Image (cartoon, rainbow, N blue to C red; front, top):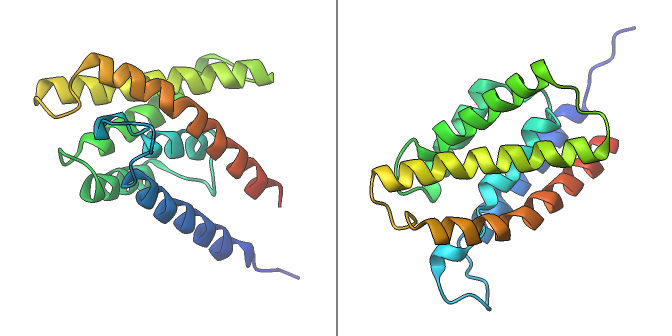
Length: 163
């Protein structure tokens, strides 16, 4: 007997809730920071675990649509996050073609590589178009603030994939 997978809409609903909470978090300034530009990049922190976990067979089209949605909600430059997410997705694909990430330390290293690629693309587009976060020190501090957020999202996706 063929059974339908009724868990699929529920997991996409959970991802939608996480995405909406991420939009809310990106609009809130942390109390100990004076500069709005120092808010962690929650969307890069969200997309990296989603790509690595291949959450619900996330594909390049979904990554592109998520990037366009992020650009519409918080982006300064339309297409900046879309191209960043696509480059992160392609980088993950290429890295998995050449390397095997089995141990936890290797996976953590993969997270750092993808985070740095994401911030490199955001930094390059910000400098090219003279956006508000084009200062390299701002991107460095933002990178440091984003790393723990990325691992929080990693834990959330691990919990969601285990159920």
